[in-house]
Image 1 (tube, rainbow, N blue to C red):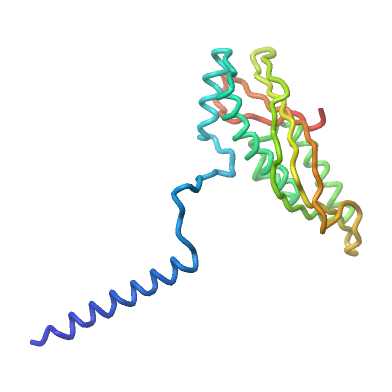
Image 2: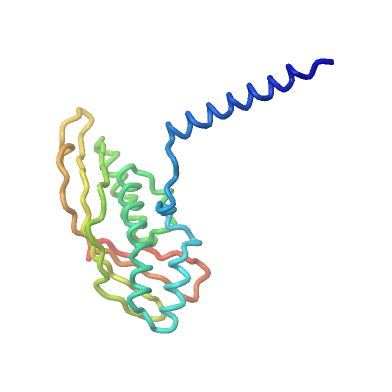
Length: 196
């Protein structure tokens, strides 16, 4: 029996696998240790939820709690803005109070009825500051001022621009209110108002 060819086959296959690995690494890139793993879903297991819940239950909304809350609020803001622009309310329903969901749904129905097409490119959030936080009837409310940069336009079915500019970014100033019942099993903060 000649085992030489089996060893050569194994070495050849290992070389091919190594070559493929190196090519994929060159194309896809290498993960940097400093990269953050950001969950854009503002999910229910987001660590800020527990920190904020614990701090607010103690009536201690210190700088650390505010910072953690704002991290989650920024993620929620971007997710809500981009999902609304694409007309995908299912993706963000768990982040919206019923009243806000109904308002968004009506706006999308109106947009569809008129044959309008919205195109939005979310560039980023320039700032997010907590304007106020309070507890009313065991419901915690936090109002946040956002300044973001967005490229946005609305076109009709004939591709005529109705509003916005598809080539120019603009600063958007929003004040949103989030609320949460600390005794609820729902770990999510809900967007309760966008027109403050």
